[in-house]
Image (tube, rainbow over all chains, first blue to last red; front, top):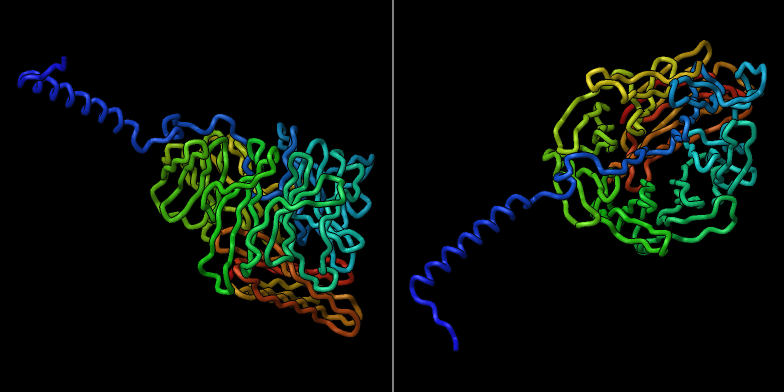
Length: 386
Length: 98
C-alpha cells in the first residue's frame, strides 16, 4: 500500500530538504575554486631544478659552465663550481697548469664557421659526463662528450648537417638529453620537428611533427620532469606573424605518444602534476591530473621567465628591468630583487641558487643569486674562477 | 648603439627589432678581420634564444661588416659585437637593445 504524506509531513520534509541544501552548499562553496595546489598551501612535493636554458650543467656535487668571452678573458674556459663551498675553478687536472692559454685542459676550441669547435652556450650533465654542442669537422651540428674531470673530450653524436660554414650564421639547436637520448630540433628548418637519437647513435627518429602546411613551426622550451618530456609548439599559419597557435605538449617515452597538455604559449614551469605559466590573466597553475586551472596572481604578466623552487615561484621580466619577483605558492608577493649587476640573460636554477649572464665594462660575465640567504639579503653576485 | 674603442680598432653594433648590424674596423691592412654579432631574439610566445652572425675579411681590407634581418616570427631583443684580428679577440662592444 502506497503511503501518503499529510501537510505537517510535507512541511517537515521541506525543512529537512532545506537543511540538506544549505549544508551541501556550505561544503560546495568551501571547495569551489580551490585546486589541490591551493589546498596544500605549499610547493609540489617533489621539486626539481628549473633551468630555463642549458647554460649551467647541474651535477651531484656542483655546477659546470662556460666562461664568457670578454676583454679580460680571450680564451673562455670550462669552469666548475663546488656546490658546498661555492668555490669556482677551471676544469683542468693537469699538474702545474696555470690554467691560461690553449694548453690548459679547461680550454676548448671555439666554434667558428671556418673550423670545427664548441659552441660555448650549451652544457648538460648526464650520468657522469658533460655534453656540449658544436660543429664537427664535416659541418655537422654535433654533441661532444666531456669527462667529468675534464681530462678528455670527444665527438659523441652527429645531429644534422648545417650550412654554417658557408653562411656564417649560427643557430644553435634546441636540445635536451634525457633517458639515454638526445632530443633536438634543427633550427635551420622553417617547419621544425622534434627528433631524438640515442647518445652515440647514428639514426634519429621523429618524436613530434606538426602540420606541414603552415608557414613556420617552432618547437622549444624542452624540459624533462617526472619522467616525461615537455615542449612547446608555436605554429605560424601564414607569413603574417599574427594568428599564431601553440601549446604545451608532453611526450611519454613509455608509449611513444605526444599529447597536448594545455594551450600555453608563454613561459612555463612544470613541477609534479602542476604547470605554472603566465598569460594576460596572470600567474596561473594548471593541474594536469584534475584538469583544473587556478589564477594565483591576478595581474597581467609581461612575458617573464618562471622559476619554481621548493619555496618560491620566481618571475623574471627579461623585457624590462630584469627584476626578480618572489611569490609564495598562495600567490603572495614576498620580495623583489633588483637588477644591480647589469643582467643580460636569466637562466633559472634551483632552490639553492639562480644563474644569469651580466654585462660590465669588460664585457659579458656570469652571475648568481644565493637563495639560501634570507630574502631581504638577496643580491646578484659575479661568478668568477679563483 | 653600443661602442668600445681599443688603440687601433673600433667596433659598433646597432640593433632594431628587425635588424642587427655589426662593424669592426682595424687600423692595419693585411690581416684576417672578423666581426661576430651575438644576439638575443624573442618569438611571439616570449621565448628568448641566442644566435650569432659573422663576417670575415682577408687581405687588403680593414673593415668587417655583418648585417642580418630577423627571421619570421622573431624580433631582436639585444646584441653585442666581438671583433677578431687573426683569430684573436681585439674588441667587444657594449650591449645594444632594440
